[in-house]
Length: 386
Ligand SMILES: *Cc1c(COP(=O)(O)O)cnc(C)c1O
Image (cartoon, rainbow, N blue to C red; front, side, top):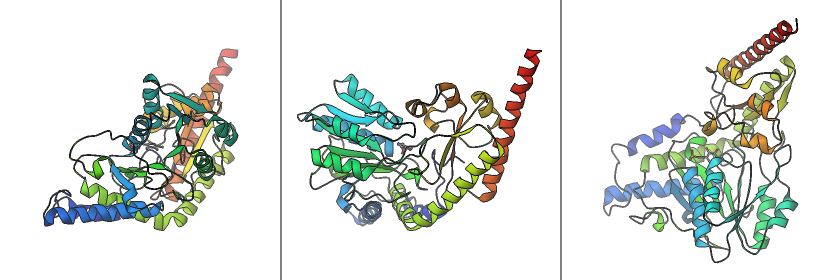
């Protein structure tokens, strides 16, 4: 029940990867037939990844995941376009892999405008239009939020940035392969994706870099053997790239059917919670949202106690990366959720291999845990009153 944290590798993806570990282990940069076979596999994967977002073959750069892609997009653009200016626009609900590179840049003299979100997690396009300046070099916003699943209006944002000649980067880790994304129609200039969010392997991802109108050229993070046209040196992880390509193709082929399935699981689960329990509060917009995401707060429950009693259920209090932290989620804080209530929040993620039975079992566990904790606190209140 935690598919926004990660997904299992689809068995069809694993099958495609296996030969590339053993029989076909060549280095994709080698100048002999073992290398050429590997290079061909990398280019097939590149085409597969590109096709899902309407990009060209040469516009896909392979990386170790969305964290690296975001760092390259944000720090690489900041450095390369420094003559134009040092102003970037983003939003408080972004993933840490966007927030932290931006904080790094702020320390080094860049200025970031943080767009506000409303109580449903949506930005205001007028505020964005007003924030674009002559020295703005980049707008960076996620396709879909990893905690509350809220989807930004990408086409409208892309229209604004294109009119102003400002680059638009999308952290697509939670969107790519989940709903249609078209870099041409949406005027996206850079987009990060991650293998392990789409039933591919962990430790692999890509960055889309627009090649024409305009050509986007960030400064590389890694220097070395000049792989990926010098934009990302390092020997290609051929099995993982083959897996990423296969995962992208499958996600695209099954997108419509899978979204409908996830939506039905999600809606049924949410309905089940609301029918059984009072004080269940949805976080984030229900319409503009990932099909496989539900994020709810429970009134009158201690958050720590709730997580403890559900430790055998794979759910998250916020994002996976901040689970150990006791601070309330920065995303929920940006939405204006009460800090106490934010602590007793669970994110449920539904995915390709989630079953009706899984949902029923999880639902039962959550309902029982909440009832028990509320009962205990009622008893406690009752006792202290007498
Ligand atoms: C998972 C995730 C990332 C990080 O991706 P990795 O491939 O694990 O580095 C970045 N942004 C968002 C929105 C994510 O969900």
